[in-house]
Amino acid sequence: MNMMRKVLIWVPFFLLFWPACKKNDTVTSFPYQNLAVIGGVNPCEYACIVNCPCACDDLYFHFTDSTYSANIPVDNPQIFQFPKNSSPPYRVKVNWTNTTRCGTFAIKITAYTFY
Image 1 (cartoon, rainbow, N blue to C red):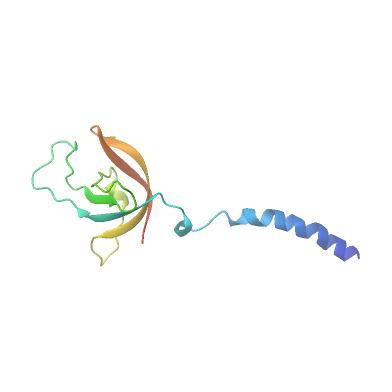
Image 2: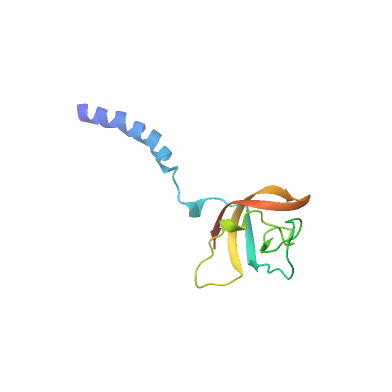
């Protein structure tokens, strides 16, 4: 009877704290804001003097799950580590924040995964 009482005391304690142990999920279960496609790197036909709104060496990037499907300037394209032995288009899930580039809408990628 004494052992049963100990079990009944400890079981609710473990059940209370057990869900708190599952906070370190993998990045793959991380919710992303949007789906997007990277069509490649925009080669320059002329030299860029200012990065306003010139997009030399910028990415061809657009959302695929939004009504806004125009090419979007990405302020930190170096964040992407493209898979070896693959070529555009790259499909990505992204988190991002609004930025501006010379008064034009642009984004900064804060997290991504290829899918």
